[in-house]
Length: 310
Image (cartoon, rainbow, N blue to C red; front, top):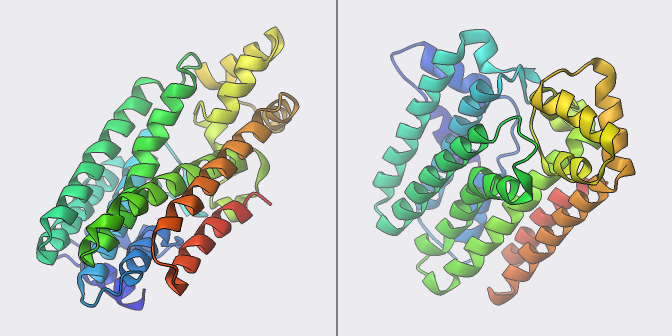
């Protein structure tokens, strides 16, 4: 990871001063670097020797950072990882364009690695993420979209990049027979991560989240806890959610009221259980790969994700 962090900083350099300023604002803000660690870990699981894992891990983090820059513009977010979002300092245009620059750098690194299979996995992930963004936008502030729409969005926006990150390891290490299992592991882990984030928006704390609790509510996001609570609630519940999500009328006291409603309807518990279920599937995906210390480490990543719910 030391090599990855050095390469991340090296490739955001540019004669255009604003590019490293905007990129480093987010890159240096304390992200967990889970995705690049997964790429390194899945490559090490099969005894990979070379520099390709570091380069692809860097590319993964660039792709993730680019999506965050774009997301904050689409969502009108004011905070990211406990700091003002880049768009609040440099504006929406700069955030979008620097995100595009990072995507370009990511694909340059992939080409340098020289693996068409890896390039295929990540290019498909990039297209899928974009589709997820548009799907989410098309259903924004709409409580009628339902669970299937929500799951399709997080499958595309979050799980796709996790899956690409974990599939890269066996590709680089020449272990294609293990690629499906590791891809599935990343996919299930990504789904669990997103569900956990959505649960914590109602039950976590700002420091752990890196944003204010209730931000999803203020941004009109119909996450799984909201959709379940809306479907199960009475007329008063439905009117509350329609006012907050569809009309965007959210007062400070509504955050606590929303948390109470998702709790009372069992929506929060069910979303939490769904996250646990995907976490269990991720661990099960690893059973077919070699029983080595790195496999244990990959299992512990799942435990780290789930521990955020406690």
